[in-house]
Amino acid sequence: MAVVTIVHSCAPTPENVREVKSLPTIYPDYTDITIPANIAPLNFKIRGKADAVCLTATCGESTLEVSETGDKVMFGIDEWKTFLENAAGKKVDVSLTVRENGEWKHYKDFVWTVSNDSIDPILTYRLIEPDYEVFNNLRIVERNITNFKERSISDYNIVGNRCMNCHKFSSNNPNLSMMYVRGDGGGAILNDNGRLRKLDIKTDGMIGGSVYFSFSPNGRYVAFSTNIIIPAFHSDASKRLEVFDTKSDIYVADIKENKIIRSELLCDTTRLETFPTFAPDGKSIYFCVAEASRDSFNVQTTIYNLARIDFDMNKGLIGDSIHIMEVAPADSTATRGTSVCHPVVSPDGRFLLYTVAYYGTFPIWHPECDLQMMDLQIGKLHTLDIVNSDKSDSYHSWSGNSRWFVFASKRDDGLYGKPYFCHVDNDGNTTKPFLLPQEDPDTYDNTLKSFNIPELGRGSLPFTAVDVQRVMEKEAEKFQWR
Image: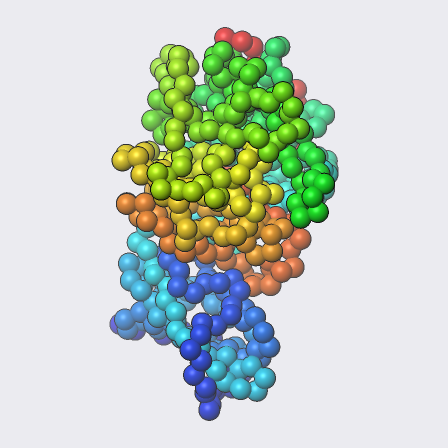
């Protein structure tokens, strides 16, 4: 049975239509993409001087029609959801006719492939101005990506205008997550089934507190790095900011007993160790390691390798050897760099996703920074050409079913990071990324914030920004060496 939805806004009927062989210039670019059946409506606008639009989306006997004055295509959310439910596992043909400068033009049709693979419904991210050395008015936001509902889970208005960052789920589980609220009286805010704890994850002999972290699959352990981070400006006018470590080590925290586990291999003063992440089976920790330079400001010679070390979750023991992993394809000329950051393993353990850049440890200001993926089952490297852009592509996380990942990309203007989604099939084949839909397509043009460190979760978090405010008033729990 056909599902026909027509949204009218007194738009005139197209007449004397001229055929155009090119795709329409729309923003966000939702042409020829693969989407999950549970995604929010793909509202978009026409770039140019459009004053009326007519869209028809067809999948078999199901049709979705929108007719509007102005330059935007806006779908009703109920009609959209019904249409996508009928289109799951199929292709949707999209026809777009636009009136520009009094002339109706029918552009080349494009396709939406609606995957049967759903995506985790919750996305968290930090809204931050792309400043260089200061921050202001930060929020960590939870967005339901199946609709347009969002809320703050930590807000500068009620915790003071302080730094906050790095909200992460444990195995995409909303009942176990952690983030940092920095500054005097700050700490790591641990969400344990809605009960919040403020943790001071450091002890004597460490160079500082926890920075980058990852949960073990059983939720008991947190692998974390402690870093002395230096921001510095480039003298080259074509580059902006460099951020680098002068020291960094990796430890494991037992958050059940408030103990810290140490290995000499992961806090070697001759090396820089950072970005630890647990494998989904908990048997190993992936991380990045570089040789520490005598001249710490010569960051262009600092190349991070991808590494792995064993871990015993039953005993809480770190392994006794480090394995360095090769990330350059055999036929590669390495023109995009081989310095590795932010390794993250898919929940099924099959794929390892990471970034590569020319050098260093802070890729968001590196336009050459690309995503790369390793098939851990067969050792194949995927360079993800269809995913990457000529701007920074970084800060990625997986959906719980391992079929989607989200990442922050500066491809629009080189300045603001925005969340893009990409489908991955069983063989590691990827599709053209698409930007997180917004209710108003003008949102990104009018938002002077980056959507930083996007993380996917299976459900809504069981706490509010007010809960974070309350736990911030408590003393932080201390840790000791095990």
